[in-house]
Amino acid sequence: MALVASKHLLQKADRDGYAVPAFNFANMELLQGIVAAAEEMNSPAILAASEGAIKYAGLPMISAMVNAAVKKSKVPLVLHLDHGLSLSTLHDAAKAGFTSLMFDGSRYPFTENINKSRWAARLAKRAGLSIELEVGVIGGKEDKVFGGAGCMTDPDQAWAFERQTVPDALAVSVGTAHGHVKKDLGLDFNLLKKINQLVKAPLVLHGSSGVSDWDLKKAISLGVCKVNMDTQLRNAFTNEVRSILAEKPDEIDLRKYLGPARDAVKKTAMERIAACGSEDKA
Ligand code: G3H
Ligand code: ZN
Image (tube, rainbow, N blue to C red; front, side, top):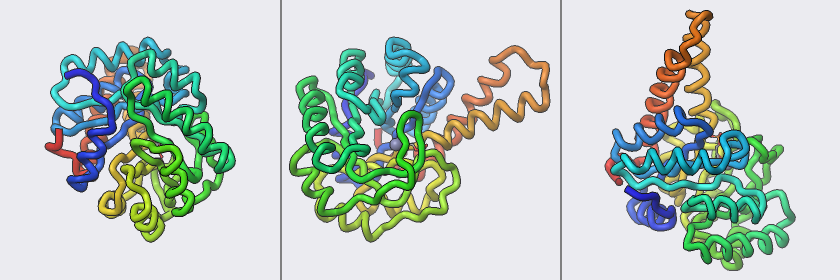
């Protein structure tokens, strides 16, 4: 199957009450683990590459790996730019075959975020790609994105932001933070409900690693249609490598620890797909 844009997948998820999982990857094993999980669960999935991942692997390699993975796949997969920080990154990703772009203008004051996001939306739409934008600030740290303590999304600002930028998906800050596996922050469901009443676009929950299945399901029932996860997969991968090398410190056949790490990623991704309710929605 060819790569698809995220817009229609998210609209379908919105109608049918589930969320499409978005998993970050930066190397072949993570990508293979994620795609294998989506295949086995018959779930759509968004393959998310951040600016950090692009810097690490290179844009041509990211796009070549994904295209190779997609050729064999029977489920709808999206190649998505996660937290694009500049129009030039969006432009490069569009040229490299990404089918969905995120522009993250959350570090700018509200009006400047609107202005820059409008340009980003125009760029994506001209290229026939889906666009995700962000209003409010998601806390924590992810690659090049530093949200500090974060700033919860104001529902009225979300409404005004959507009217002026018309995104295909809107990332909001409702209590999660980037880069944690165990969250004790607590999602603000009342806030999410208010935002969902005012905003038409499918909502995106960032920083979802470690959010409990119950919280995830509740968030999905309140309009979240895309769930972003990164740290949890890195953790599964790295823990497996660590434990194998602790047992066999002299192992130098990297397939002996990267292979099991890939399986650990697949297992974690399958659990999260189940929590998103996207099993058999391909
Ligand atoms: O954009 C990606 C996500 O928001 C990942 O957050 O690492 O906390 O799961 P996470
Ligand atoms: Zn994020």
